[in-house]
Image (cartoon, rainbow, N blue to C red; front, side, top):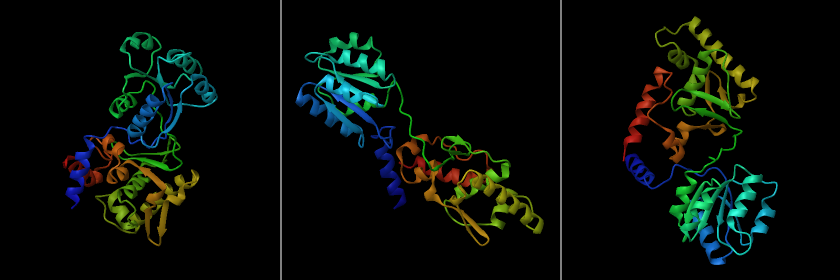
Length: 290
């Protein structure tokens, strides 16, 4: 059954874009023709599900509405009565330099003048979902995901932990490795003895090693507590685990069929830890099933 699910997922992947569209985009759409505007908005909705789309038929109304706000993309018809799309684009660029301008027109002859404004893209009418998708995937100013309040964990490649976009600093490497092991366990409980056997593979578990392991766990907890995130660890007598609901992790996203996570995976998982090789092998095997 699992093989069938992964087969379905990776076949579908071939028709999906790199974007998972978890970023909420704010998009302006301008065309003085009502039917053309409806067609443009529909194409954007199909290509970018979840985006906030603000349609306008009059350039002056768009310019007024745009004031003081941040916009990710502006789809602008070029040939209109009165102020044309090139003039609107210049105003937007002068005031909101990071807005991606994508010109929309039925006439290819406008391309030369349009590109003098260094837009993000250019599509011809009738606008299709595929044309919009192509431009959105190749924006001149790439969209930056909002910083999550959750602890963000990177397992693909080397292991790292981030809080509000900044790396979490562990004073002891073993403390960071202990946290990595809890991430690898995906919420399953780990005993002190199991943690010790992972951190010191070649040592016999005795009272001395038990105490040493407890010190490492305490060091890990100290880092989390100082940063106000100690609640991501669940303690129960001699066992600890990670609260998976309180972190954002590429490994977990991959297992949940998240398109962005799958595209981020390039065959490496916690490369700085030898004990992670088993999970790395499982991930690699899953990524090859089609």
